[in-house]
Image 1 (cartoon, rainbow, N blue to C red):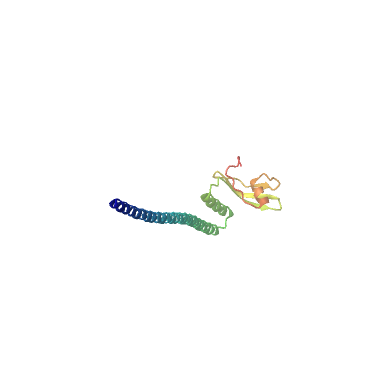
Image 2: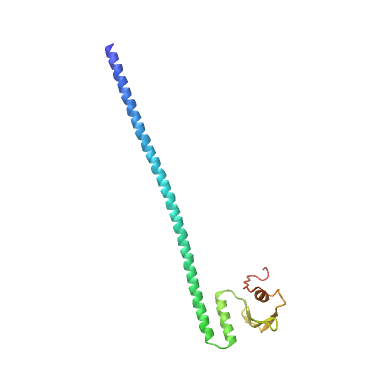
Length: 170
């Protein structure tokens, strides 16, 4: 019977040691899991921050590209205006000067109908000594300021430019 008690006592001590080892190992694994969770959260936050930085860098790159395009366009426009100025100053003939302006405007945009008008307060009209319709030079004409449905009259009375893509629908 003593042997039985000794064996039972040894088994109970061994059971307690095993329980302590299991608790210690469980605690160690729990700490490792918590550390992994913290590392995972830290990596997630770093990934989000990196994504925000990437998006910000992309936005800046896009802004820089737009600014570059704007600068290039401004440079081209300045070059064109400089060329127009050189050509115009080389001539004293009003008809030649107006043709130069038309050619350059037509190069910059679709100008199927183009005219240069001068406001004549004495006649209450706009005089058009130069006009082109689909590449054909028109005879000089005038528009009375009393006709507000005329585009040129609208521009003069509102003191604003008017760009029309389709005169029938607009």
